[in-house]
Length: 373
Image (cartoon, rainbow, N blue to C red; front, side):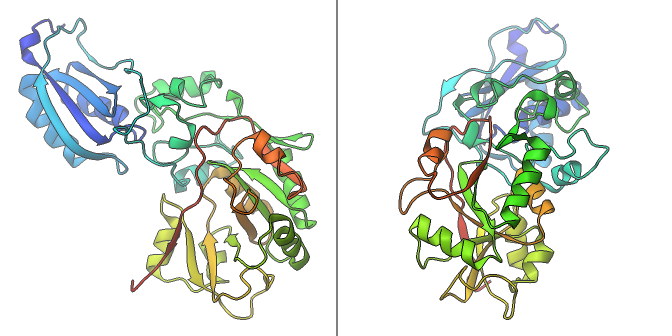
């Protein structure tokens, strides 16, 4: 028990320090260093209290091993004038604040390779799970109601962790230790398509895409309209319904190998497509490809994007071709992000693949292009 308040410091870290795995990282580091104290999220910051004489060694170790998505922009050290009535290191309950201009929340992150492997591994508890995520990927800003970045302040609040996910969340040796956005099929987030759910919903949706149907698909930050990129007539129908006669459509490919079969990609462009930012990348078309000629009628470029959620990846696994991937809106209206908004666009699509996790903040896909390497 550490009752001598004069021996304690409070370290306040500012920057991108919430939603990137900082609290579990600090906890594990404190365990290794044998520290007594705590970490907790506060408004736009992470607070850490520990013995004053350990401050320098702790910060040196912290700077050397920060989580890859974390960014510490400012460190403030001050005396901590309260006593600790425990003799270990803990993650304490956060201080709640509304979102404001000081808040630095990382953007939603494209699905990582580890999570992709899990959804394709029959022995994984996350096999075929369309909402798999970890500290390195998944929804952040699009789910958040308030600061700090905690499950209770997000669209995940209605979905209580099941027994398995609770054990993972509490296990300091697990990569999902204290990660707020985790869930599995038992936690209640479910896909819906017509009368089908989850795996059956995806399978039925893939069949309809192959039949030439236009699908409204609910993703991270809103709905997208998707269809078979080989089907000239369906793409023409989408152009007419969406009032988009000439502007090129983006293409989502299953993976880099598939994208390279249809477009010229150098190493830098491949890195960009595989990055956590997951942009739509403008790249030069290859000649004599088997895609519909009305995707990008008068342009030498394709807008290429790779699956950036497990949902996209699972859908593309069921298809044998790329898909048109465009925002679900009409003309210049905002992106549809909830059931009411997408239902008002019912005349543009045939069916919708949706789910019961709310989108708090709509996010459209970014666009990038390589210029002089």
